[in-house]
Length: 117
Image 1 (cartoon, rainbow, N blue to C red):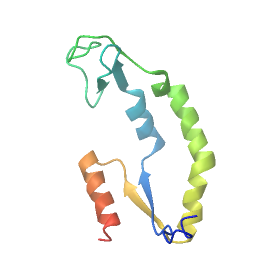
Image 2: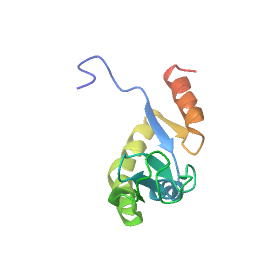
Image 3: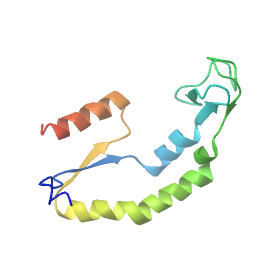
Image 4: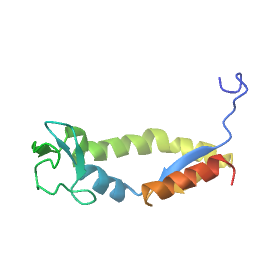
């Protein structure tokens, strides 16, 4: 379809992050029951423990942030999505970006790739 629109895929960007890092990042998320503010128990903890700094609401772990759910999502990714990287990799189209860096560094890397630098 993209070729018909004269918009062929020329690059495939892949954020490269080990499963262990993803698991740590995702299982550490906490959400305020009252206002929805997000925290992370390691990277951005609430100053009030299990309560929201913003409104004082109780923090909880969403079901989709629980270890079992994330492991299932990763298994689906490895079975269904990762093979696409092999497909496009054989065509020399995959550009891997180190997804373990700070968000601003990842963004800068993405922009450089997209700008062809």
